[in-house]
Image 1 (tube, rainbow, N blue to C red):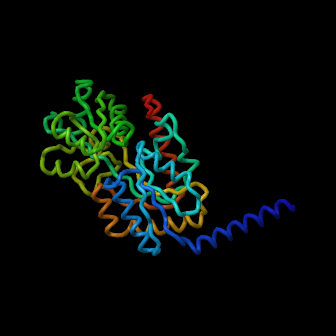
Image 2 (spheres, rainbow, N blue to C red):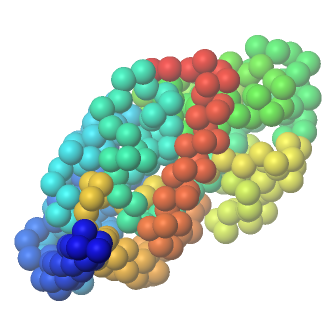
Image 3 (cartoon, one colour):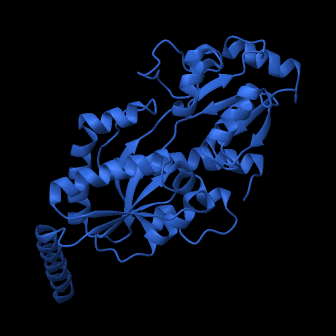
Length: 321
């Protein structure tokens, strides 16, 4: 009885302490780790969200760019920061959903060492081909790839990146053999695609969309489960030749594990509010995306489901970095 009473009293005390901390939070600047170099879409989005938090709370949200190893360097630093709400990180597809399976040695466990805050967005990839590739839709692409195995190449932003795995998922489901060619970023990959050195790519929207509109690239489909509001006339891969195909990028805000739930709740509420602001929606729309939002519990489920889906593919392919 005494032990149960002591446990109940300790739990109540912890909850009261957490509530007291949350009432004064934030009392100093917050570090927002962006695990990539300045100027990319992750950085632009993170800075915009940080600015909105600063405007709401009156405390600076300081952007800390910590690039390296596909985003895992910055996420690792965040996972080891004090769990007091004053360090958050922008997690990505590569650094959270696939890192555990893809990297032989990883110093953090995304499921164990990070606290979910909010899902930001899940942008689609745009499947584009060079105009000289003799296909006009996904069905024709699959038929061509099967007829000429190894003849087509697809570009990616680098080994283990989202558009690399989108291509491998396409290969697996289409029973095709399209050869992967990794680049150091989306921009050089699109440049070589325009030059005909590679024939296709699951590209982010920003570098590909102007080329599609000018006719220098052909858009066949979007990778997501539903069509993009930015290009509603372009079908999904699933509806245009490869049923059940669905692949989306992934951005989420996370904190170190054991960050007090009351602080996680505050961050979640304010970030959900920021995601509905017109300027944030416009920034996401440029990526072909919409704001996600939701609860920390929903984000935790997204991490588990995404890790299981992509981890299975990586193991089947025998990939490692």
